[in-house]
Length: 290
Image 1 (tube, helix red, strand yellow):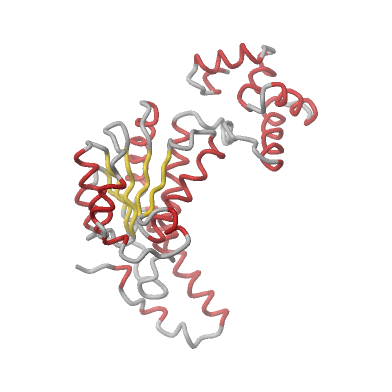
Image 2 (image 1 turned 180 degrees about the vertical axis):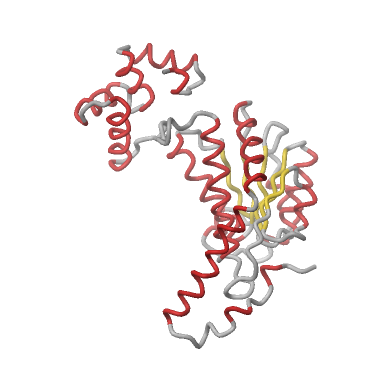
């Protein structure tokens, strides 16, 4: 089997003897190919977003599974969903082979452990979907996850940079941006990792948009847990309601810093209780409530 990310890149064979600026230029030139590779997978990415959002609307969850760099990227994307979109911590779940300690340290053999993958996926249900993330697409860990997911009738999305990846054989939707050989042979944290990050951004963001977690291009369900996010919440209310920052902060403080509630209270001149009831009736979608 030819694993393209393991191939030698003919454009960078001299990378160890060229000036620093030329190293940077070569890496940047190769990175330019990533977006083009992802572009070819847009239709499959859109199909995956629709599948994920449908599962969300029916109470399901999204799981990311991966080993090494791919696992870390999945955990990163999952961890950013609650503060960005105001969702529960268990709505998008990232699982890396070897557990949390593998986020900082390489866990030898974890990606080869079929039984570990099978065990890590025991919480999957037919209401969920999972994304198997791997540059090569061949770790036995992910085969274990895939076998268990099939048994649980959980939908599978495969994200890989290798057209011959084993995980593609299990997938309901296949996303395969072929980025070519890496700048440093086999270092799939580079172009392959960048491609995976781009796709994961699209999957989670697109699904959240589809279920009403944004209004226009505002993160309307942001959780203002620090000063930066409070300033962002205030600015959203200012922009949508055309009021001053002082007024926006006042209405936000009166409704526990819930942006959607604040916007409804101001625009419709209603109480916090009435705004929350209206949102509940519209499944939390601000556009429908307005």
